[in-house]
Image: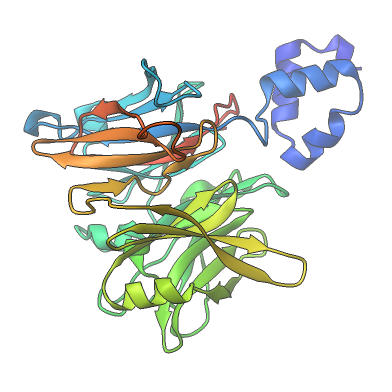
Amino acid sequence: MEDYLPTDAFVEILLRLPPFTRRRFRLVCRRWRDLLDERTPRIHARVKPLAFTRGRHAAQLGSSSAYVYDDDDLSGEFVCCRQVWCGGAAAAAGLVMFGCRNGILAMVDDRTGDITLANPATGETLAVPPPPRLPRNCAFHRAAVGFGYHPTTGRYKIVHFPIQDRRTETFDAVRVLTLGAEEDASTSWRDVPPPAGSSCDVGCGLVSVDGAMYWIAMGGGGAAIMSFDLEHERVARVTSLPAMARGKLAAGRCCHLTVIRRRLAVVITASDVTVWVLHKGRRKQRWINQYRVVGMDTYHKQLTRPYFFFSHGEHYMTITWRFPYISMRAHRLKKGDGEPKEMALLEQGTSIQVFSYAETTETLR
C-alpha cells in the first residue's frame, strides 16, 4: 500500500509515530528501513558540540546565535564551525538556551518567560507560552526550567520548578507541558505535586538523560540527586552525592550536573576539577571518580556548561574570560607525547553555553 503513496507523504506519516514504533517498522522491508534511516531522527546519531552565544558588544546584547562543530578532531589545526541558528535583536533579546534534545533547541526569554523551540535543520520555530503565575522581571524563577525527551513514549516535555524562596530554593509543584499533546498548548501546563519540602539548587543546573530530569536538592540529609520521571511524572530521590561533592558543596564550592556518554555526572570545581559519573548496575548504583582536570584557573577558566565532554576525539571544552569577550577552547583529555594542544573555537559573546546536538529533520508540528 505504501508503494502508492508519495515519499514525502509516507515520511509525514512515519514522523507522527513514536520512535519505538519506528524502530520496529525498520524490519518491515528495505524501503521502510532506508526511509526511516534517512528521513527520521536517529536515536543514536553522532552528537556534536553546539555553542549558544549572546552578543559581545552593547549593540549586540539582543543577538543570540548557535554554532555547531562538525570536526571529529576538535583540536586539529583547522576547526570548522557553522552557524545553524541566529536570532535578531528584536526577536532574541534576552534569549537563554535551556535544553537541546534530538536536534531541537529550547530557549526562554529572560524578560517575559516566553519559550521558543527551534529546529535548525528545518528552519522551523514554535512559540510556547510561559508557565502560569510566573513572577515578572525575575529571571531567577525562570532558571529552574528543563527540556526533556522520553525515548519510549516519544514525548518531549518542558519542566519548570517555580522556586518560592531564593534562600531555601523550595517549590510546591512541578509544572509540566507535554509537547504534541492533544490538548491545546496554551492550556496544557499542569501542576504535579512533589513531596513536601522539595527544593532545587538552581546553580547546579538541570539535565535530562534516559527519560528523566535530574537536579540537586539540599535537605536535612545533605545534598541528594532528585529525578522527575518524564513518563509517569513522579518525583523521586535517586541517590546521595559523592562524599567529596557533598563536602565541597557545603563549603560553597561550585558543583553542577552534566551528562557524559549518556550517564549522569557531577562536576566539582575546587583547586582541581573532578568529575564523578553515576554507573548503574542491576542491583546497585555507584559513583566513580572518572576524570580529573589538574591546575585549572577556575576564576578565569571553567568547563563549559551544561555539557563539556564529547566522546569523539576525547575532548573537553572550556571557556575563558578575557574582557570584553569570552573564548571557548577544546583540549585533549589524554596526553600524548607532549602537552595537550589547545585550539580556539570561538571568541565572542557575553555568555557561552554548550549542548550536545544531533541534527534531525523531525518537524516541530
